[in-house]
Length: 222
Image (tube, rainbow, N blue to C red):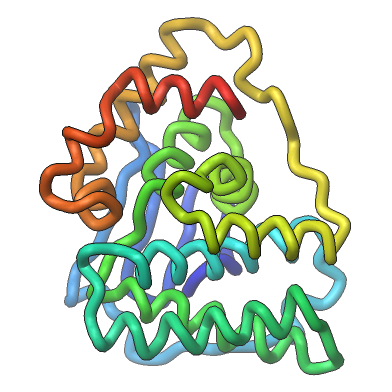
């Protein structure tokens, strides 16, 4: 599932990926054998969730779809689910109505399915470093990173900013200001390890486009 039901340590997803922290990096479990036999989608569980947290977890779904639909691993399966999830996210965060919770729950499911046989991209690769070094939760971490990725996802970032304005969201700024060099290097280490994400985003020759210094410069903007 894309976004909801997450914690700082473990983030279950209905597309059979689990993330957890190890001693050196954020780890993942992804296998055809871990697919759930049944799932429960209950929008009432989101009642009372603070507006900013609701937005951050919803944007995890939105960003999943942007990365999936623009990636080199793109396929008909991810396209079908991703496009519908994006449409639902737009209805929730740019229009809004009494069915928004129901729509976001379905968008979350579709967003997870979109990358079941695809992959995420630049935003997730960078957000894992923020999570590991700063303990920032996944949803807000993605939002912090995505706002600086107009070079890679111009249309998605512009729409994301419209959603932030519509929902009166103010992201944390200058979180890496004064960061120790060792921590900055660690974040770059974690990002560079995630080669499938970079390949999906930038193609098999991604190392010609992205390197350690560019990754560190991106982090230093945040």
